[in-house]
Image 1: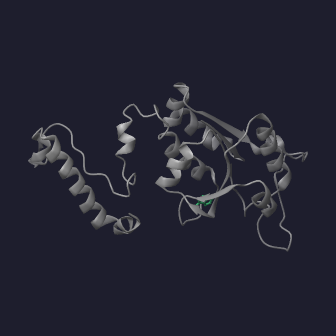
Image 2: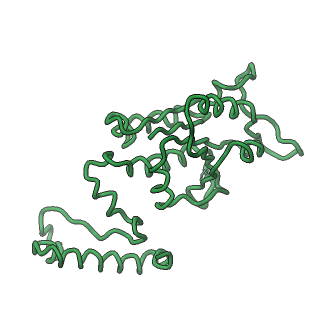
Image 3: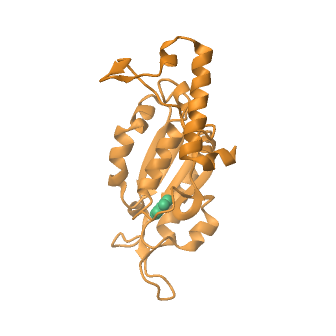
Length: 226
Ligand code: ADE
């Protein structure tokens, strides 16, 4: 899988892409992440990528030309499954969307900034608009990082124990059961007895009951989705 991220703040993503799970996935040759500086594509002699909005509104708007030039250059090299734009008014990112995107070959993620981008880009070049939550970030870089992390960890082979992605919270609309490690008793705090029993069926039963109980208590809305 390949993800191309287009941004005006590449330095914000460089560290993340080269240190996190994304770095590990790239080293293993499972994923390629490329960060593109939008300013490299502007024809403006001052390297500007934004301009004043028509209509006298406040704020600046990212202009068509650099975005179109960057996306066109990428599309000339390969086909893309989705051209994603990060925006608070997009479709809410969630685990099912991460699952779906993890099956794609090539993705572009365009990070929004300023007051937004010229709407013609959204109409003509963007295939999917995604929000990571009902709050407004300064730019789309954190959203692109969140999405890339959630997507890449689902690519087979990225996590050392593939099972661990399958048993994540949300993977079946249930929160994960609690986990424990040694020692079995710490400061008098005990690990649930059943986990020490070695009885696989009982442990599975306990795990499901815990998942259901925690989901009911903490995120009852998830049970309605089932
Ligand atoms: N850009 C600004 N806020 C955002 C959000 N909540 N999700 C995605 N992109 C954004």
